[in-house]
Image (cartoon, rainbow, N blue to C red; front, side, top):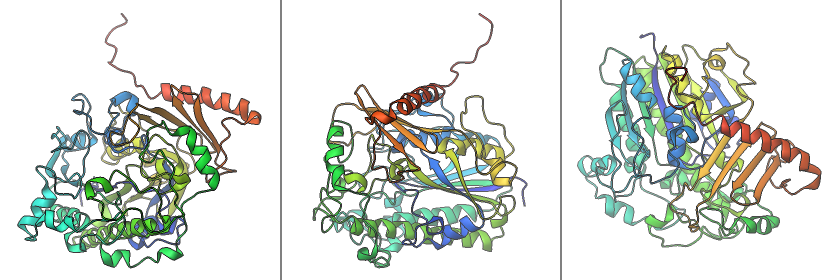
Length: 488
């Protein structure tokens, strides 16, 4: 076994923190992830640095906050050439790196420009739909499965329902690309990065995974009638569903919707339990496919010295407070994500940590486990001490931050929105810059975020103190800039 671990890095899309059975959700089936939790370290309060794909991915791939790397939007024209991905640093140090699936560090239409990313193997598939160029997943469907991708996806016409068969699914393709890579002969360590599109909407798992869930037995989204009034003042803030929908309705929204719209335009009125059944089905498919890879690692004698990381780029509102998908909002379901580390050779086993951590901490952690020092530009803090039992598992950093800067190009609200969030574990404050709007929650007393204290006279001093701390925390994410070479 090499001293440095192999790294299997799994990043899903739109997966909320509360979607792992072992971590408190009795309604979802995640047996493989449950085993990783039992055999590793799970962080229950991990926060993304942006509630939108591209700025979040730029943060965890560089170990830098959005204010430092300046990758703030989905659909940005290019990725800054001066920013260095952690995969490039690992490749320089001798890791054989590969990836399959979504990357999304710049505009993905009709194809995403390739970076100096360190990957020897690069199977790009931004999403499963057949409207892209250089699309490795649809090439696989044609060449290996003898299936026409357009005919395959033409049958998907609902926000929630059975999708393509398991054997033709993009998650299955990602898994097969990973297995081919990790079973190749090589002398040194490897890293493989899986970026499946699911559980991104629409909620359309294969039929056998959808059938595992009885929607009538699932809980509804977090919603009260007061949300309709409360959210009205935020209608000019960018969001996929700025007009509140009714998640306690019937069905799953409009039928016969082209897939080009389903992934970005949510339904208005729907039964959130039906959507949740499809969403959970997609996660259970991911879990099963991850199990295939873990089995291969065990069969080939690689599991003991392979670090498996599982997380998502951000969450999804899924009807909470009448909102769907993404936007300039900072509710827990959108900004808090699963984060699991499993490394049988060196990780603690069965540790569930409630320390505040951020996705920006992943890159320096990877460098640390590979025996490499973080670059001076990296701003995240390695989690290695907690993973190995050398640090207090209840504390990692005093606060977490998240921000949004005109980040969505697919929202009905055209005016740019800017927002930022500060959370110290108990209190969370969100500021919508350029307006007089904000939100303030006591997560200890109100974990479901129904009682906004922003305008509460009794919370005036608390709000002022949190605003000051929020300002200091956001200023600390800017970075040092160009290194100083002399005194003047």
